[in-house]
Length: 140
Image 1: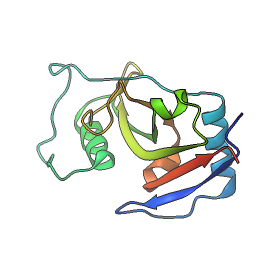
Image 2: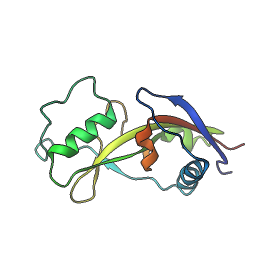
Image 3: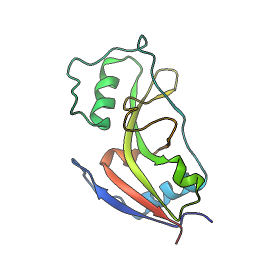
Image 4: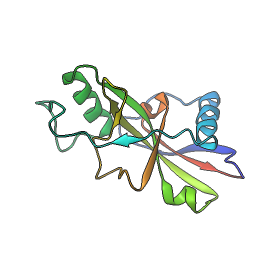
């Protein structure tokens, strides 16, 4: 069975704009076709750390700041999903808005591994993730 419905589950701090139905349909398609992207933890010697990085920074700000100081890096937004929910064939899955960076070689790098463990979550790239809304997809 595939996911047929999706809606906003939570408005995080700094949310903005509306998510039109066409965008929800794009996200459902990515989810149902398992269009997941692999992420890696960057090597500590492979990047510069922004001077203005803060413990309070969330993933979107952190990714933006790292992209600004590392040549060829860009912020990539989307959603993370717990692998266990997909493997258990749950009727609903939660999609957390999230941002990572893409390095000059096209690798996605996870800068917030304590929030988004590589072993426990998958990432779906979609620009609407930057808007800060967490979503919930359901099969009915």
